[in-house]
Amino acid sequence: MFSLQTIFGKGDKFYGLLEASAESALLSTRALIELLSTPASQQSLEKFKQARRREKDLFAQISEELVNTFVTVLDREDIEALNGALYKIPKVVEKFAERYTLALARIGDVDFTTRAVMLEQACEVLEQMVRRLRSGMDLDQTKKLNDKLQAIEAEADRQILDLYRDIYTNESDPIRYLVKKDLFQILEKAIDRCRDAGNVIYHIVLKNS
Image (cartoon, rainbow, N blue to C red):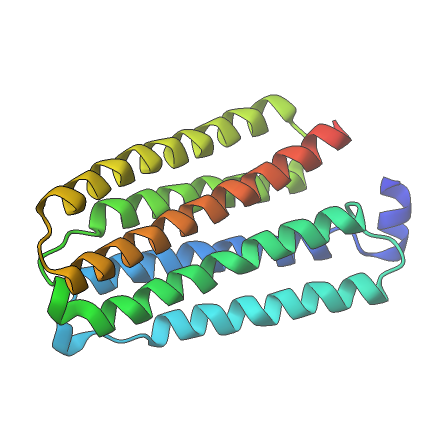
C-alpha cells in the first residue's frame, strides 16, 4: 500500500489538506477569544469569514481530490468523514460570533471566555491528532489524545449544566434568558464537533493499527 502511494505521488496530499483544515478550525477559535476581549465598537467578523472561506475551499479540494485520485493515503470513506467533521467546526464558531455581536447589548456582562478557551484547547488537541496521522498509526498515543479531548468535552458539559442552573434560577429577563441559552448551546455544539472529529480519527487509527 505504501509503495503504491509513493509511486502515484499521493502520500502526503491528503495529510496536508486535513492538517490545514484542522489548523483553520483552531484559528477560528483563537479569533473567537480575541473577539470576546475586543470592545464592541472594534469588533469584526472578518477573521471568521476568512476561516470559513478557507475551510470551504479545503473541503471542496479534498472532495475533488478524492474523485481524481486513484490511490488514497487513507480509506476514502475515512477521509470523507474526517473532512466533514473538521468542516463543521469553523461553521459553528462563526455562527456563535455572528449572534454574539448581534446580542452584545443584551448580554454584555456574560462571560463566554472560559468556554471559548475550552473550545480552543479541544481544537489544539484535535490538530495534534490530525498531524499524528502522517507519522503513523500510533493507537496508544491517539487514545491518550482522544481521552483528553473527551475529558474537555465532559468538563464543558458539566459547566454548561451549572450555567443553565444559574440562568434558570436567576435570569428574570426572558429575552436575555433565551439569548444566553442559545449562545451557550452553540459553544457546547462546537466542542461536540471537536469530539466527533476526534472519534473519527480514533476510528481511523484503530482500523489501521
